[in-house]
Image (cartoon, chains in turn green, orange):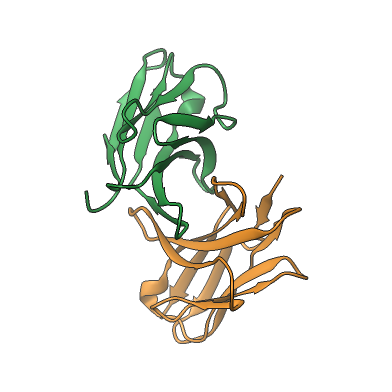
Length: 113
Length: 113
């Protein structure tokens, strides 16, 4: 696609429910990243994929958070048993590792009520 | 571990005045440096980046940043700002051997008429 696409743009969920956030990267970008951005803060790294391999998941806050990229393209970030503190903007980025150009999607704003 | 400090959370400035947004980083190895801009209700957009070569890098809309290795800084400047430059600006760094960006907490530039 022309840019990084994330869906849904907005998600309101009840505490305790599971949510799945989707990211469709720029075609041909081998690297895909997930970030979380709290209000008034910069994005914080969650996890990174090279093709389908999850290379770094050191930023995932706990085991309720998981991510996959089974075919090396679309990725899903799943949060189980959501809590109010999970409310944030979740951003996906993909990159061309040669030029080190990181392109971000519009983000998914998650609100846990 | 790498980190980024943006000391100014908000910078108010009058239209056509010069502006400098400060960014300092810490890292024990060589780095790549980036400035991203986030306009209201939009995603993060790459403004400019330093990978190698000339320490002064420029964007297409008149911003420039200079990599200063001795001072571990990458300040963003513009000689004359426009109302349309009102946005949040994020500085980011990545070690050359790694992939995931580390962001600062952002500086909100408010251009007043």
